[in-house]
Image (cartoon, rainbow, N blue to C red; front, side, top):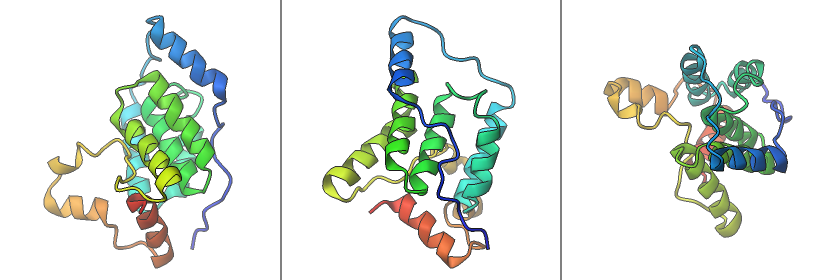
Length: 168
């Protein structure tokens, strides 16, 4: 049985990186270059989170943190993993930096809105967005069921993942 560490596995951005990202966007500075391996890495991390292997996803992403520090999808997943561990302020900063870099990135927008609703109203009808939600309908029905409802996960992990995915 793997116990999830409570420490945030990523360097939490302060206010200055968020402000710098907003200024870069306003000044028209280009986004950080994407790496060829980025999509595969993010897909593997998302699959690990969906199957309850958050610790594996955190290790995978933390290893590439410096290379992906300005990638909105990476920052969103870092926020999801920080939130799962109870670091809501860190999650808010990761979502905020993701939005500052790309204000049209829907997953970070949804997660930030969900955090606001949880803090303000104590509940939210939104689910945690990992960034692959548009890809799920393209999967065969059996694959969607496996990805969205893992069956091989121990009950205590399934409860924790269900709690963060439903957030209500």
